Amino acid sequence: MTIQIDELRGFISDMYSDVARFPRAQFHFATGRSLMEGLGYAPEQLDQVPQTALESCAGVGHHFALTRLPQGARVLDVGSGAGSDVFVAALQVGAEGEAVGVDMTGAMLDKARKNAESFALDNVSFVEGYAEALPFEDGRFDWVISNGVINLSPNKPKAFSEIHRVLTPGGRLLFSDLVTGVELPESVRDNCELWAECIGGAEQEQAYIGLIQQAGFDVQRVVHNDYAFIQESTINAAKKFQVRSVSVLAVRT
Image (cartoon, rainbow, N blue to C red):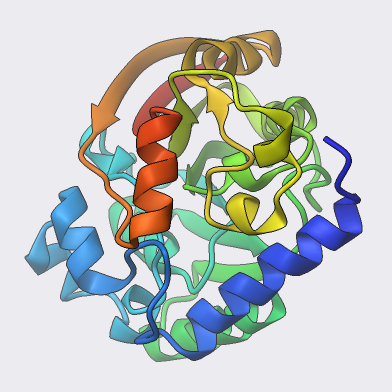
């Protein structure tokens, strides 16, 4: 990959700033509550979450279907966006738990914090940061979640290493992401637009699982999700490179 990291992050941040500010605009990927319901989130659960958080959701899976977060758990959402999964997590862990979101996009953080004010729970907060340099001390969380974000990281081994670091021993990683069935050519790796659309940074599935294991996790479950892009050019690229959504449950060893 020859793209400069700052250039890539800027392109991604611009894309998701638009998702935050103009949630009803047309993107290459689906967004909003209808997306979440299609992924498997229960409507009655989403009714309890700020609707302005749901409208800017651009997730790719429903990893909460693999297991429920326990009451009292401390949870970090890496790439939390407007906060949809943070609020779902907060409802599951209850008042004795904590749900924290970290994101690099200012517009998403602003929206998430406004959503938190409307949610009126003391156990929800949002901070600025990168997946490759999480601004938390070692062993801070019991669970880490993420939804369609780690594929955007230009340094996935570092991102998984950071997740491992901030988890307690025996802590769990529960997340969804996009992977491929084949290795991507350099022409795709060097395309900022395809990165922002969650294709350019996707890893071949077995290699991706290997990165999680190499970071010190025991991968316990991997399931494939029903997920599809919505614009023809991206649909064609996804077909060509066998892009698919997976949800993963792993334990920090």
